[in-house]
Image (cartoon, rainbow over all chains, first blue to last red):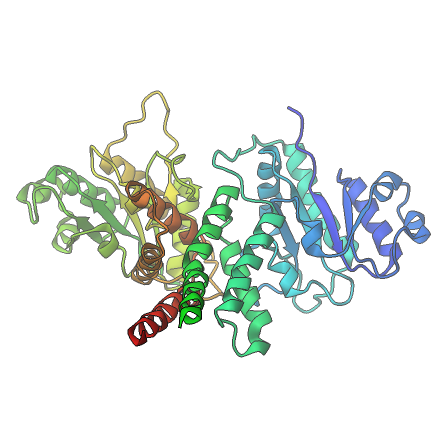
Length: 256
Length: 256
């Protein structure tokens, strides 16, 4: 059996090129090779990354840079966000071991899978976490919560590697796979546009948190591509009367 | 630590009173005591049930009878449907061991939990499975799939009991619990009424399967009570323009 390709590692707004190199190194240690950077603070490429990668040049050479988390996960179906902030959101929270198993099964089922990590200082924004399929929380001592970025990647990569070596039979997805990130985002934006038109978001300053809550609660359902289309049909069906009847009203007024 | 109260067993359209008695017996074997019957074919009570319960009279004496699965699960938050038909629906499929663990954790968290079983011949209707939080499939040999109702209950009750004796520390839900069945059903019916008004369900003969697909895809999200309220607000916001503007149109016409 060929082992499933490893998850893609996505680093959001990483600050230090040395840390990017260190991440590339631990990725190589544990058999991961595909690295994506979202808005690295100092741009890309950065020579210092290669200096700290200890020869894991192929990881750095293959880096792809994106302007947002949404773009970086657009082609992926299963992405977990590694963060300790598990109580702020209603998304599933898993251990690294549990997450590795899901990524293993999903990768074996042909899905695009990834692990998202926040920047060294600020961590991940909740609006970006809302675009993932759940949270991975590393069980660290609460008296000393601060975990180095490369260590966080290492723990997850180690769990992946352990699983690969153990080579359990993958539990293939028999059902339709979930839709990739870009289709979900399109659906969210469709819903939000119609809700804007319907005056749903008030007071306006609450719009961001309301949008995020909607994305999280719908995201948990793991819609398939077909279900995304169905739900967009639902949005249209619920809102279309408004436009159509408004047009009739306007036409009636013109006749007055 | 007191052990969490065991899951409620729900039998849908059971045919033979003897089987109801046998179910009560294995429930008692493994420490389960609360039994609900949905539309038992021969009515209730049936003396033959007590005859086969082998002394588990307290289970049968406490039976509650319901007219529909929806009513039987109305006060429960986590219900799993035991069925082999896992490919027909997009609901999560779990082993009995996995399901027991979730029920254990949810029960310890104060939620109402249950296991739903179909009738001897017909099994569960997919529209009723759609009202549950997922499917439990017992790993039986595909060359001989037919499993006796009481055995199906027994396997699940045994897994529950094994877990209770092992007494792992419950993983309490820290987040808000999911809404009980009756609130979900109210939300579904609200959505479907508005979709009816918007002409979403066509052709009409496809309405039942479209309704079911919507319920399954939304049900997977496990909305909290607050999220049910939010989503009902979404439905209203999306559809309210229609009614309001239709009223204006009617008023405008009256003035002509």
